[in-house]
Length: 445
Image (cartoon, rainbow, N blue to C red; front, side):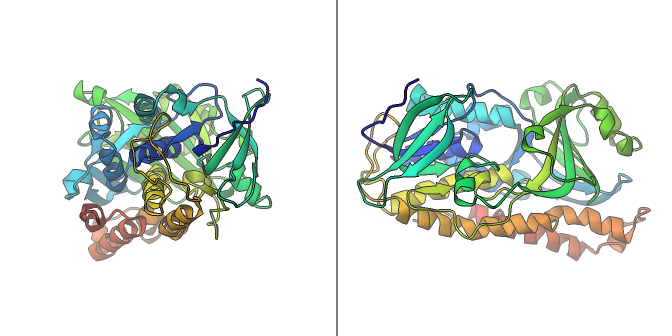
């Protein structure tokens, strides 16, 4: 397609059609701010594995009218339990509604969630609200004046130039390998590798424990996580089980093209061969899985700045974090809520009309003030979670048990006092913004 300049700029261009980008589109639309999502792949498909949505993010999705669809698809998680490598229980706590939250915790296939969000965006905002096959190649800021905009240069999946798009505001939700972040931080280099690899997959089987529990077993150098993610199968007495096997390795970060690559179980299965507990058979889950994918466990250092004029970062482009504490997707969803609120409060959405791509109106205000407010709400908070996850987050109870009782224990409270376990859990909830008091607090007016 020949390049052309759109004379009238878009109000907001969102770069990336993942969870963060799509929820941001829905939140901006609800706030009366017109936006368009640009996604690099030629077609969005239900790819990936399981993720968790914590109650504070479900609160945001419920306000967007999506809780019934989530409840029909996902498992409403009732408990989180930590075990040692011998299968002995270290700590268990109720989750979501079972823990007294006003909103549930959901375990769901990432692809199902993305398709649910995509359908909502297109239904509410029109098919043209999400443009696939648009990979951001580069961008140019036309200046800081109120009449200026960002010029976005896109290419198709084969690298051929597409149209040049102008936007009054740009939100980069383009992930840990963000083009926008790299533009402003060209010397940052590759993501920071933890020294641990994750192998992930899903398989069908019988429910374990109560059929609504997320479990983690092991310690810092060897861990197994699994939880059910399908309401439909649960209603039929079966389970779609999402699992993650994690091991420390002695090599550098895999190159970008090797992230999320399909592998054979033989490269990691042996260390888990003896993990057959009376409540879960780990090797059997691995063997029952057709497609297994390898991911490096990586993050990036917190930034001192997200916003540059008319452009800012959101989700994994802003604060990629280790998948500890079930917080990655949830924090991107909280970003989206804060973004919409900040832009409205600073006058970017002048009329507050029901906007989207085909209606409503945004004000003439430069977005920088709104972006600054959004960043003030989110940058420091997410940076603390990044660092907290590096320290082990709530998973540290497994490492403590391993260090103090590597051969197992007769009673966990002889190894880790109950008060210590409770304090670790409470600290992380407070850090990540999902203590019961934070989630159930009435909204401010």
